[in-house]
Image (cartoon, rainbow, N blue to C red):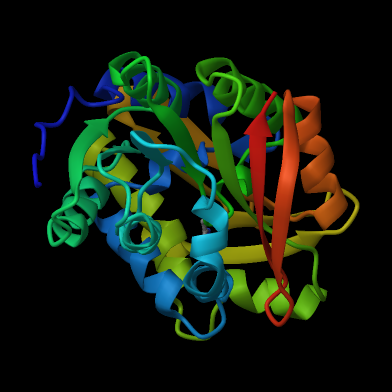
Length: 324
Ligand code: AVI
């Protein structure tokens, strides 16, 4: 059955965006939140990144899902509510849903702040007749609360947090978020968590600074977004994309580096920002883990780990946790 529900109100307003930009560009070092990378164009550029030979997370995860999805969903009882936080194109949840064909009723809740991602996913899942789909244009937290409130008392819930999205949270925020997921679940419910693993620095750098320049475009699109939505006057050619592996913090950082001294005005955020030559805006962190750290993080949030699958070529992990 296909039953696609209308999107909820936008997850953030121009005023929130303007307030965050004004505050974060006044920090030292200057920052912009990575959630703002995902407007319509940004989501399409991220989809393109996932197809690049140097960004191996998506294909590694796809291989794990294709090989092990039956094992991953074994033992989950009927009826089942599947919730995907950050649904991307819907391909991954479609693989799991295929493995669940024998279940009588499956409700799928897709949660994303990007309408483009929701549309893509709803289209992908539209071809499966044994599931009903509901899209929530919302933050992960709000969407999860909504999905949890809409499930029946008998339904088991499986939350998917895939593609290394957990890597974009700093460690305290990752702990808080996993705890929040656990709070929305009942004992026996499950979480399938994707996490990218630590690997050689050269492999990490080329994944976040690809020779085609798609990741650079993804990063610089943030400045284009500020120009369009907040009437800023960033000269995009005066900034360079930079990716660095910060081994001490176990994270890849993306920055936008000013090529020269310049002032940029952002009228809708009510500020003018001064850049020294070489000064950077820190736009994203992508934390990398060991398999043991991932298990420990789940445990600290109130889960036990049932099984972990590792793709050893690209060094990527999927871990199935059960809420205790
Ligand atoms: C969405 N997230 C898991 C990606 C990552 O790998 O951190 C975003 C990304 N940034 C640059 N390339 C991909």
